[in-house]
Length: 191
Image (cartoon, rainbow, N blue to C red):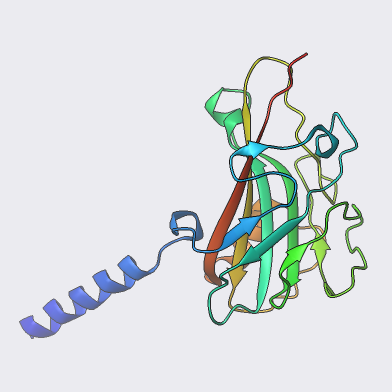
């Protein structure tokens, strides 16, 4: 009986070790944009001070079994500098087909944009409570902000309803994340 409990304890410990949350995963998906490099500067046109045009994204090295994808872009620096209690959310996109290799720049802010090859894609709600992209718009206080464009590869086509924000999306994809990848861009308002 003692061996049974020792074995059971070892199996339970192994299960808890394997259950790594998406936030703790090592990035294995390569995420790029044609307009800036990783750790590069988000162009003014793609900021909310400019035209507020969404950036293009491409990804590769998706894990086997990827059925759909999701994207969250947020700015965690606002927490580090004491502006907000949680990262400000700039973009939430989900129901991206697993066959997609990227998102075009200048996407419509409609909740359900009609994009060729991206059937079913949904723009979730950003930190302003509106669908679509909201570009960098930090105050002119000399702080360099970081924008994390994180892709999530999912093991299912969850067909999620429009209107999800970051927290609701993370809850919906919990247990379905196969891999992640991130492109980080910086932006600073100087005037």
